[in-house]
Image (cartoon, rainbow, N blue to C red):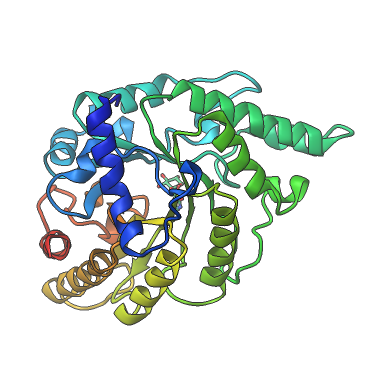
Length: 353
Ligand code: XIL
């Protein structure tokens, strides 16, 4: 994903446009501008780009999976391949084989990759959990493990992945700090530490915070807003992902719009990062269920399209056969046989507006 200078300048300008429109980008000092370089795909077609989470095991194994993704999506988020349990299976020993295969495949197909995720309480390697249980000085050990990991991963993907979720899901649904391994040993300051390490490791990257359940106002969204403001003031955060794992009719449109605008006022670039709409609890006939789902996709993608700072909608998978919620939830825009559902037309129409 290396780019020539004029192209890069153009794309950076495009990426800045929403923030400039909001009047939030200070003119002095390069570090006060939120985004770094943006891969080219974002500039094509619609203002809001479409992405999907992809699983490397499916790319090789499921006929039609890869071609469906390639035909319709511009951004790829590796669903599990860039998580710590995948990349550092033993202390200090990295295994990049699967991640490299997926990232290089994406690059060779002209797709941009969103890095997910450096620091999270889930999908941690066993050795880290064991290490955190023993030893006299866990603060030093855990902090050093974090630093080694972030630096190792960012260096490895330098030039191939320009945008990373540095921290994921640091709060619970009530807006309290999630009691994960990092928080237990390092306190809430672990979030800022992670961003500082990432920023120092590679100042050209776009650094994001990602969380879910934050699409409507409430304690969770307020906690995230406070964190984003603090990280923005310290010039450590460029983008904010709102997951948007919802069900049925989903949240009210005006609430989603209000929350996205609050987030946009921080000057951060916004991403809808893990959208899916579960139909697991919806008990109508097939046509009605699909119509409900289509309306929810239209509502959430439409909210992003109406907020200039919101640049991308990524769905968490794309066919029901490969959804993390199981195929029975029918949560994605293509059915298990890869046929477009009403949700697909609703999603793409909302983004085209
Ligand atoms: C999920 C994956 O989709 C599953 O395959 C895996 O077993 C667990 O993690 N929020 C996130 C994602 O930020 O990383 C999670 O992905 C879904 C919830």
